[in-house]
Every structure is written in C-alpha cells, then in structure tokens.
Image 1 (tube, rainbow, N blue to C red):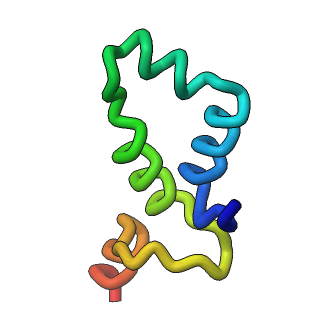
Image 2: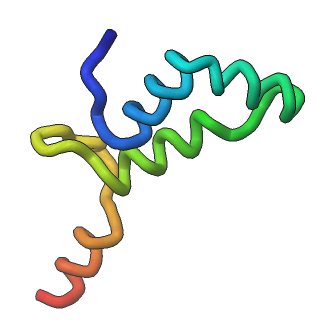
Image 3: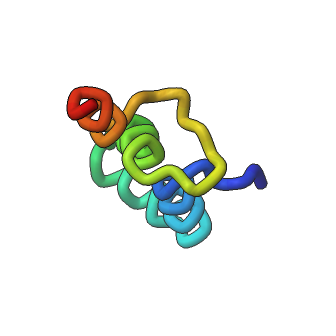
Length: 66
C-alpha cells in the first residue's frame, strides 16, 4: 500500500479495510463522492513532508497579509 498523503487517504484505507466503502456504495447506489472528499481532506490536512500540489486557505491568507 502506498503511503498516505493526508487524512483523506487514511480514512480511505480504514473504510476499505473494514468494508464500510462497499456498504456505502451499495446504499448510495454507486457514487458517494468519496474520491472528491478524499482529495479535499488531503488538501486540508496533508501529512508533514507531503505536498498536495494545491494551495490551501492558510497559504492564501498568509500571502494576503504580507
């Protein structure tokens, strides 16, 4: 398994390992928006040393205040 880039990847790993992802897909009819949610969480909460390639809100605010 690849290293987690952020919180979204970790949540994805847990839900896959426990089978929650299959249950959610069955109940929701296929697409629950999990991929987009995972990417948003990775951008909002990246692990140290990991670059998401995206600008987060704090980076923008920091540049505005300068």
